[in-house]
Image 1 (cartoon, helix red, strand yellow):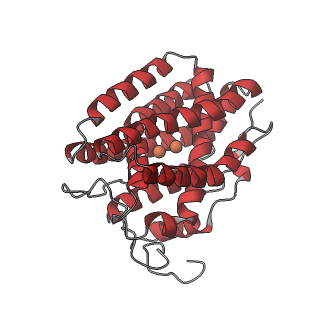
Image 2 (cartoon, rainbow, N blue to C red; image 1 turned 90 degrees about the vertical axis):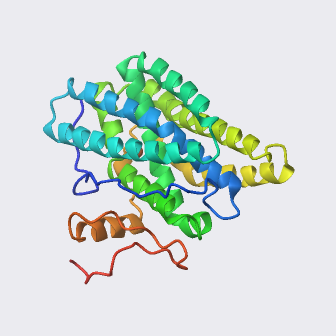
Image 3 (tube, rainbow, N blue to C red; image 1 turned 120 degrees about the vertical axis):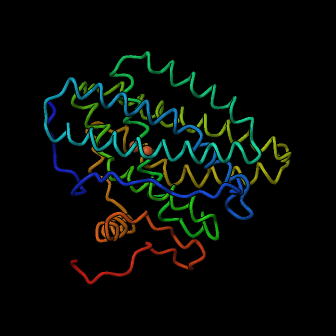
Length: 299
Ligand SMILES: [Fe+2]
Ligand SMILES: [Fe+2]
């Protein structure tokens, strides 16, 4: 029997993802890091296919559950994910227009893949959603902790978009798993969903990355594969433990402690005057701090 437990955050806040990407955006937006830029671009390409799928699964689950707290969480989860994929859509269109028309075909394959997944049972889809959301929680830790190494001098719009997207992923980290536990709770599908939800998305993202690297004429260079091996090792090192912990029976996303930088960001945003756009990070700053003026403690 599912019992709702208090979340780590006070609220799941739906924010306006109105990042103003410049039209002449350079698709290699992390200086000197072609593979890393295209890896994130590839993942961005998956989002307008994946995230509407998560929203649909959430809305469908809401019809089967009664808990009012979980109902509210699902509404907020859907609100956040909808902001994310619309913003990824805008970014992806610019990336496609700025040198990668091949992404149109890449996205057609993605659309088909998620359409096929939509035909699976709700239990299957929720296990997938919960698995994917476990991975994004690991991504939050990775991207926030390693932000200086990953995004130094990178485009501030895309960097800020990714980091704030991951902050919101961790803000709503409990929702997909709660949906699964309330609807089914069976261990084996959830176990399999950890792999399915993670590897399916990353697999599509990496395929898109390969298309971009091929277009750039660097796919067969040893230096490209060396950079790719480094990026993959870093991802597995930081995200892998989250997936492993999620495999344990009794796993609860509430047991993962939210990063301090994320908490500072949420606090800073909450104290920002309303109607202002989400402020951009200073990617040239030696600490890349949260983009809010320091507040007196306790405020
Ligand atoms: Fe998202
Ligand atoms: Fe999410």
